Length: 366
Image (cartoon, rainbow, N blue to C red; front, side):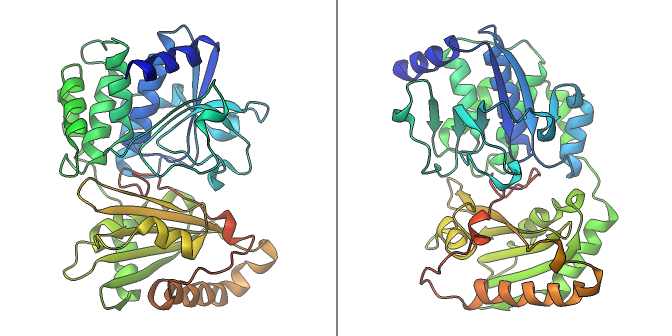
């Protein structure tokens, strides 16, 4: 651990500002970013946090409002395209489709998902890379703060968000490793415990139940696999996919759930859950939907994942072909999920753009 700390100090010593990028919005990504921001600021570094997507999930909106995150977190569109050097937390995907073509060169990567094969720590002495299979990426940030002897003030928002991150991403500690529990307990000493009742007492909008009804009415099941869609939705409602997937995977005898929707008439978003320990959800998604999809597996073997596939250009979308487009995508999805063999298929350029990661606390990449 001493070598890791020294490497981090070396990287921090060489910079004066550090943009932090969040490619998915959920408590773990927020907690990771806020804690890294606090750590970097102790080195005298100027920090800005930029996020992809939007705060669509009710819990995320609650966090955003309660902690006035609008003054600290900025949409990725506000990040100058001239800025490439940054930190990446709760992800290691350097060409995530949600970056909208933006090129980033992260010198700090802290994550608990599969490593992006294009990232090589040894290729650059100025890169700090820490990827471990723990329940929450924030656990690694808590450990880093501890190694650096950084103590957070009592009732600080960083400590509170860090505790929420670990608690949420490990499904209330049910999927936690020993490291997650240790990190959670350590940070709990500095967290505002009175705030927790707010984080888990949020209402779900009526449209969630409407989408859930549509998912049930349209599902197709084969053996232990279920695939369903909630149709055409706006990006503000895209978080509903992951919530629905979380609920459907709890069905008796269902081991794999894939939910999908066409978002803003431009992308198809996928959320997947898997309880089959013999199936690699990570490989399952990459094989079918492209190399930039992904998944994570909890300490208990429960996998969560997803993808975002760019649809053909606007010429092929629109109200006049809406039904045909949906039918075509539905047919393709049911084939890939229920019928497609394990033989790798040749990727098209469109499929190679696939990528995701949920924007909510039930996130697909958490």
